[in-house]
Length: 116
Length: 112
Image (tube, rainbow over all chains, first blue to last red; front, side, top):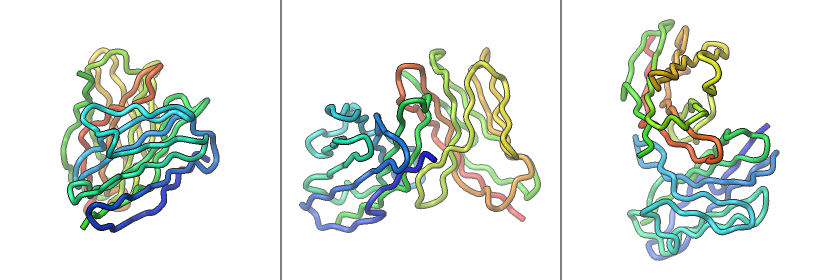
């Protein structure tokens, strides 16, 4: 149990375009989902926390207009990188937790974004 | 500032040996301490976790030791295998706040 999927697993886009990444909890209700960004050989950096049906809470320094997060259902959250630029190239990872999970976060496999 | 300090940054252990990774935290409100294993190009996977009501938790070859007074916890991997070669992250969170504070990671390499 506690499986989280992400789609796509990798994406290459041109500078200026927008990219949407999906995060799904496959076998539990994810009342809270988290989005992280990870640069090579570095730790995970939390970007935002989203609760189902409400606006995401962004960490300091993360542009909410650039990284749009939607958590419309108990199994799906999306991250849209708007007007992507090469500096947005990174590994994006989501995680999810839910009722009875006692702070346990279950991570997706990640999405590698490359902006040309 | 809530921080979790992790050491060492990298670790090389011979096959069959014991791998030990240490973490220290500052916030005494933390009450959940997980360890994650991450392979290159993959998301982190929950390995083992402990809460402060116990001083040790063992699952197979993996053991967490927890020292509440010293605000430290460590991961021990017994009989380390080449397949254990990965990056390990410790983390911490507290009741009422599900956000995880991560350590900086330890790159573990098991050599034959």
